[in-house]
Length: 250
Image (cartoon, rainbow, N blue to C red; front, side):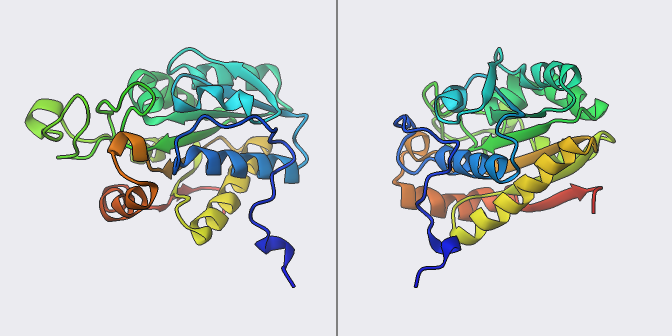
């Protein structure tokens, strides 16, 4: 007999039948499913506002049947601030990649978190600009090759990778800062639990919650999905270790 919790391929009610544009092995689809499941299970489908800026997930609104606002590149936390302050009873979250959140959107991200806006920031970190051709991102690892640093990231030329999540954990306005992944069934189960806690925080007015997902970009990394998962574990995890960095709500 198959237990209900082991039926892993059922589609969440909030996800429609549109074919996803993500590359094989991309982490976005799994995170989308988790977001949809948590919103549905919390009964917030009619009270949720998602903010989607620029990046691979710019078309998130094509897949999740909730209210969405399209933000300019990097400005999702600012737009989310307005949405939440004008609609304090809504559950407001942003869905951002590393280029959007940690490059052009650094100021908006830091100041929204410092103010303790009651929003959730879902942060996809795959260490590369996946949408625009695989360029170096602020989170690209040292010696990691990309389209704009084909010989590897050079500290003297490009500086160090930005651990933006650790920076956000230092701000008084953040109540929950965590780093997760979705490369195994156990990791997915853990990520869903912490994602729900983040959504509960915003509804309780506890401040800003950040859930980072260390993710793969098989196409940008020029690997198969299996190779990308293994490379992430061996190279991304040592520099961006999964785990809770801060939790003021426990």
